[in-house]
Length: 308
Image (cartoon, rainbow, N blue to C red):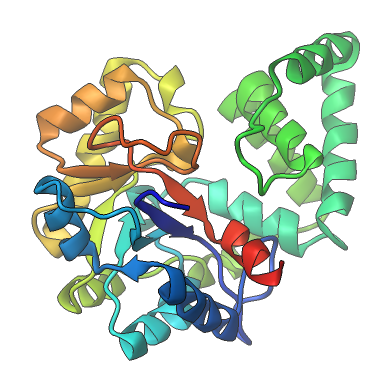
């Protein structure tokens, strides 16, 4: 891969954090960094930004990024980063520090930890949604296949893509939440018992920043389809995110697009806010079209390459 990009990380597991779909251990993470270091030049976040702004990035220059302010990143990945003296980007959405955190990560925990496996969840979810959609299901399935939905995300299985199509394109946030809350009720799952173990604290964010890592924007509520929001609603997502993080770590100048979704309004808002660098969530575009569109490669694809 002869173009500059970032490696994107989300979930990790250890004795405290249960294994889940796509999660990796500390040893896997450490081995991955060693493997990457043999082929690429891993830059610290601030060095990557400096070289990017001065047009000095080389094709083999990469950086590391972590999305969603997950506590498992602090517990599992951060000690490895400190040992290897690598500074990374950490992209944070702020609703998790409010009285009403977005349910995205809670729902993810539920579907990956409270069923026999992810396919067991999908069986239950699809059955529930299919009853709700009834006669419209065939039409939606036909449209889904026609557009080859999310085919650019090579880490997703067919069921992963169909789930995300139903969630983001058909149900929408409110109906999806209703379905998931009903499934959680059926399973007698109480999110209050696990919520303390999902995200970093604000003190953790301060510590990460003080260690030289870069904390950046990831919206306030982490909408999975921000491009469907109006200009004003998108602006509010980023401005509230900015105000929150600015109070904790000082001036914020970086970001990543939640679920890789954005439109021209998003880019205009980020430009007006003075954000200096932004990242996508896939490699469909290997050339950097703009300063908010740097490609990222999911760590699952790196892990797959390591095993080949």
